[in-house]
Amino acid sequence: MLWLQTKKVMIVIAGALINALAMNLFLIPANVYSSGFTGIAQLLSKVLSDYTAINVSMGFLLLLLNIPVAILGWKKVGKSFTVFSFLSVLLTSLFLSMIPIKEVSHDILLNAVFGGVILAIGVGITLKWGASTGGVDIIAMVLSRMKDKPVGPYMFVLNGIIIITAGFLFGWEKALYTLVTLYTSTRVIDAIHTRHAKLTAMIVTKQADEMKKAIHASLVRGITMIPAKGAFSNETREMLMIVITRYELFDLERIIQEVDPNAFTNIVQTTGVYGFFRRE
Image 1 (cartoon, rainbow, N blue to C red):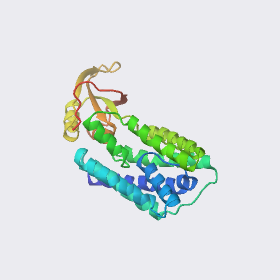
Image 2: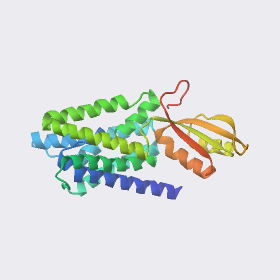
Image 3: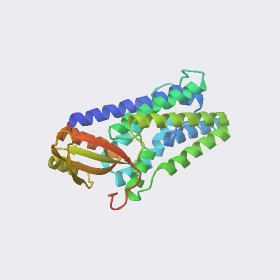
Image 4: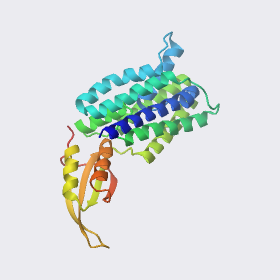
């Protein structure tokens, strides 16, 4: 367990460093904006420096914006997830301050695409290891547990505000390149992890009882057990069907690997859940 937590911290550090590199070497020099709280912090820092006498670093603003969200996550989501997510934000803010802003390419399209790809790699590996980069991810987790509402519309509105504001203040070309970054980063995150809020796992295993106990010890989720039989081998097994949020995928994968590495597992997108689904 200690080694697992150590690896998780190392992944969070690597993800934060990658995020900061994407911002300071590609997106910020080109005035192309990221999504979510990172984009808001980036936009606020630019507006304050250009239109007022106040100069506030993007890293500090990112940290400031995430403090109330971290408090909300601590109360509503869980301590471990919130701690790792806030650690990611804290390290990203630190790296943003340490790494100099330097333009790698003079081509704005290259900056938009590569910035989006590199940023998505940092976000994706962080999500894959059961943490997040803070901000909207924590809000999504809270909404999922409290009201079972999708975060998509909120993300759309938030990113829409960023794009429109960037267009009005710095030209619509910048806003269009921001759309390129958002699209690129979304596609890469989908490839590394998943953007789906809820997932259904179907686990076919010979060790159904042990698997059930291990899942219940870590995740407070209902499990449906279905008799199954191999068509080729004629061996009797059981299939465990469980609906989880994307933030619980890392823990479920770890449990399956520990209990039965030979289990056949199918993870599919869940577009809706009707009936009881634990949110608190």
